[in-house]
Length: 330
Image (cartoon, rainbow, N blue to C red):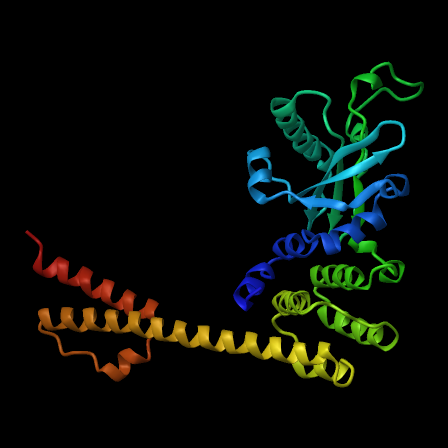
């Protein structure tokens, strides 16, 4: 990835989640660790494929799901079957999530039916909550429906029954993600970024470096660092550098990425300044031209140069109204 692509993919929580977890290298351990074991153990993870955005878009035209995967499932009693893994990324708690997921599943099944008829493929909905608040709504669809209390209601058989898998980062414990260090790092970063506790992430990461060999490929490391600095632009780089261990690649990449981002910000600031100056120059010229037409003494350029664009425009518009009243009245 180029730096521009990295910056684009790290500009928001949603863009970052789609980029990193849309990569099977991280999606596979995510699903392996958080799907029910009876399912995870029977999926042929080498077949996991993320469907392209064009497929998701055409499938869910009215309601857009974040990521859609396919994989082969080895069911002992029926041989291999294809299944869909529907991944939904949230930054806020959504009580109606089962209903929304049912809408996604409905669209997927109708597409399947139109394309190949029956039987339909299983769909497993997976929700990742990155919000700072714990996820309290039930993952069971039937809990959205009011049924008579007491004995088993005869209405229950008419209510869809499914649940979504939930990974709630608000209660995420990185120590339990021992099987895959890169995924543990990414999930901890996402958790603390949404909580605006990025400095805590770097402190935690420094501790990890002491007893775990930290290895993120260069693109993923740069992407994560750009995301961290975007999540909290006020980070103290010197404090971060002091926190990270020795001559590690992590420390070197952090310094490189931070300096690169700061250079870009300075360049953008200079560019914005030049554009602002050009716009100000236009308004200064228009104002002085109108003063000339009205036979007024020109406002000194030094005085005008100290005004903001909005002030220059306001002064011009006031003078223009005066000009129109005096010279264009019938």
